[in-house]
Image (cartoon, rainbow, N blue to C red; front, top):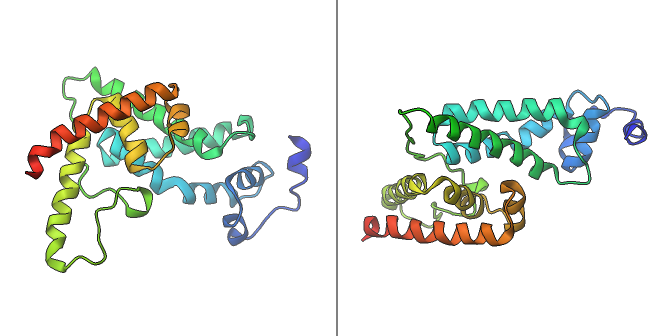
Length: 209
């Protein structure tokens, strides 16, 4: 590791150059002492992590807090990160664990509730698309209504089902990535996802009739 870090000298000074690198190289630049490198990682993942956590826990402000905590942990432990692994998977694992802890803490509180996820879903962060560029202006209300109904339905799914549903249907993650993030085998992931899809259809179906 020390050899790899020394090989990065002299330090990078251009944010543009850092943005052109993959996660692993940016991480190594940070470990080598490049002051802009960690900012680039935050810039790259902050919005996606906030949205991921918001969909999971249903509280925008708390999702922001947990995202900050996730980056604090990444900064603290990056030197111990196994760089043969995918950085984004490690980062999402940290965020996912924080989200799970948040839900467990809420479960001990009688005031547990989930706020509507509203219009928080960002088009470039999820494969499920609500906006149609060809739609007429008077279709906008119907699109927003559909988005709200989907969000409310997702919030009603059991935690384990909601977790894999969000990762697959909204984040577009592969089954393998979900298995790694949730520490479940592929069979369990697929089973939970199938049940989540079935429950989702059963809940939202009457609303769309």
